[in-house]
Image (cartoon, rainbow, N blue to C red; front, top):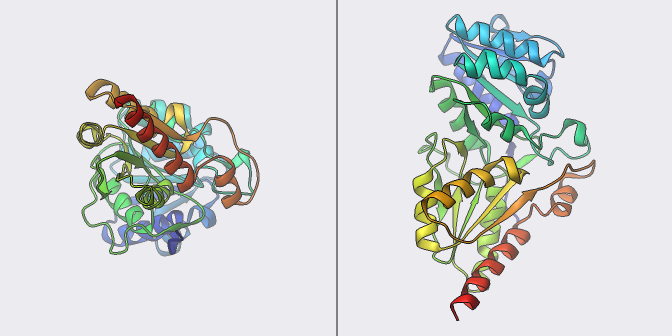
Length: 319
């Protein structure tokens, strides 16, 4: 089920940032000497006086961003997801989260789909680290159109935000843009009665593929794009649990600290149902992006397999 590829979400981020820069002179951008990769180069080219390359010093970058935010600026700071979240965590904790500064952190090259660069540059745990910072809004957009909407929403939101974007071209999920995007509100892309597939990032397209596969087996799958990991749309989760009776969560992240854990906590509290998970349980390796996604089970086929097993298990228990 090949879906047409659009731009990489990092590319959409860079272009959205430049658009916002034209509208809002209060926006400033910082980068850790990776602007050609994070795509903040578009902002730098148009607004060199509002762009700060702090060099390969992610912790310092976060501190400078916090200072600019404290002075009234809307500060976007970008680097690879693993660099900014791992290396800058102490500053994120104290200068941004604890101080509730209006800083927007954007981690590019998230997940294992960056491919050949290998584990040293892959963001396996960035969402978990962001979730451990009280007050942070955490978002993982699915494609270029949704990334633009998320970046705009982040700029308008008062308070800390983390957005994860990716390196490869992303399958197009929102052909006509994402005008109804709201922080903390899941988007139902497909309704269903037998199971709900909840995903974000690249796994949204995979979940849609899985729903089409399941349909061939007579299984009706609901698909929720849970682009915001926090605040989680608990109303959509509870509704899915009550109406479909089973949930499969798919994410390009370590399962025990990301979207899966957030959904599981909500389900356990609001309406317990059988659940399955598709995601990472270990660090990956260097390799072609598609090959890595297949090796670690981040595919529509694997989502469909988990959903089919959970539906059949429920059916046999009823009998």
